[in-house]
Length: 215
Length: 309
Image (cartoon, rainbow over all chains, first blue to last red; front, side, top):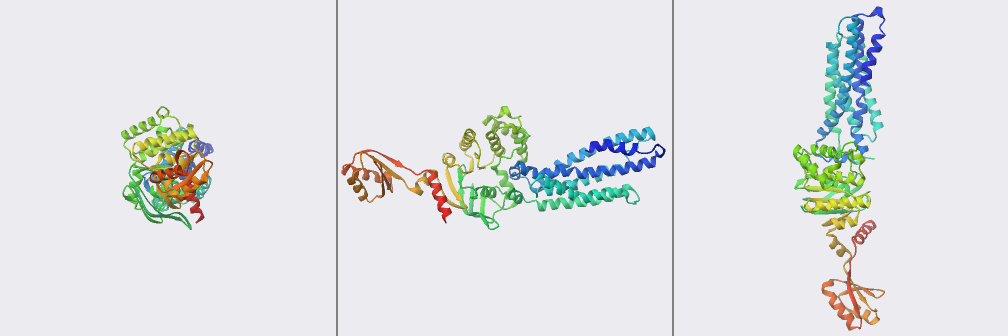
């Protein structure tokens, strides 16, 4: 999906720009606007992978031997989160790399400069993408440890990340001094939410409930 | 190695395990028998620190089951084969074991050695790179036992290790457990299979929410129903029957064709008197045997009594 986004997004945005309006300001605006879609992608992907983390083990009946190991709750949650986070962020970055390559190829050919990466792009990709992904992963891991089937986990997971997606989509449309400042503010909020959610996930993770409430 | 004192677990209004007090020695194979929902799995889960107890005390290897720091040590000390093997089908046998070896923090060199020795012991070394999903149920069960042993645990909990296996696979697993018994591992075996318990276990506990009895299989067979002496005669005459009934050591007499089935306190002590009395009454004794109740008789008697209460 992110790979597709990396190809389709620049094609759709830049090729739709009328030749008469091809200039640096318009191109930069469109590129910055499309960057947020990678953040959305990073937030949506874990609803597929992270939502499977515990409920998938429940279904495969492999959770009991896992819970019987001398791993702490925090280690289990961290392991499950990383297992979802790494491929999600990785795939998003690969898609973003394709996006940068295509955008730069176009911008060099039409404007004589490389549009990306710039400061705004770097902050969004370096901070907002992983932090949004962590938030989504943690939400989905919590849900996965409390439901009984994958479909319910995915549906609830999608529902939980919906407000986050809304904020990310609306953010670039807000009148703000700079996208970099906005990215830093969003990152700060996400970081606080990530830390809070990790402690919440530890507090709500109950081995006994997971084992005894199996259906 | 395992001690419990009045260990109790309730789920809401339902009492799964009540006042369980037992002791399992180091190197002992202890069988836990009981029907479905008797509390066997709940007991194992409590002892493996997977679920909390409601009351009472439990110790594994001297560590108390409750305190978080002790629970981590207990989990490191025990190996668990749950009722569902729960292997990762897409991973190879080797990688399944390696993954768990890492979780148990077994150093890499030791991990490699353990995996190789366990897979060779189970004659699966040649198939180490095959995906577990391609294995038969019995083979998966063996790998799951190997997983429980990957960190050389002091105590092994086996929950229904031969359930749902065909006779051949069940035999393979039983042979493997016998192999572990020779290694003097402490094994706590939950099973429905009375024959399996009889053959594998040093002692057996019968559970139906409460512990109904504990003992060696042979002693259970005699303790519950007593031992019976069977005297095979050419013909059971009224005179013979009357003379046997007169004997104080004989508590009960039953006639079955040309056999007398007698309840005596101590066959070693009382049988000579019985034979002498029969011969004196003109009976021709062909041979004398002992009739023991089976573990199945004991089990059914105790479970029915418990259900009737």
